[in-house]
Image (tube, rainbow, N blue to C red; front, side):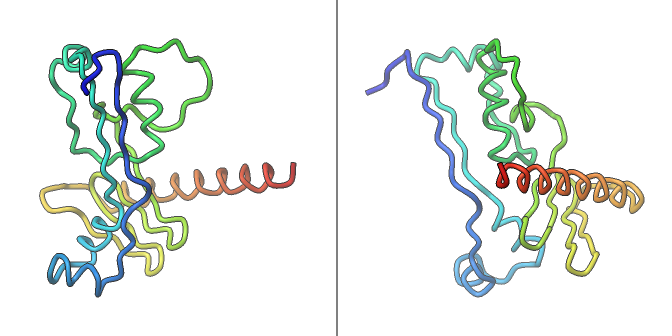
Length: 160
């Protein structure tokens, strides 16, 4: 039953992490880039039976930019204009703000413009995107700094 006083938020948990063989059986032959993208895609749906969100966003509830689960909380806080003053991680999923995701095991970084493979220090730029090598290097260094800070914070919380 559609309840106009309820908003439904559905999202998946992590990517598929299918092996290359399993993905080949499902999708056919694909590049390393397509393999990484298929492993990181996670579905997310916000459904509002009353239509309030549709009017608040002007009907624009889709975004093809890279988003992550960490962005869900910020998106909901912004959508409902909640008075939350605590720490927020991530970005509004409906904004044009740039973000990234990475695999903590391989440190493969995926952005809206490229995939960076730490294993062999290589990157692939998405078709139709233009970004120079120096910008990628700077972004990768900032992401590495971010990961180091997160790792240190996680270790400290384990010790407490």
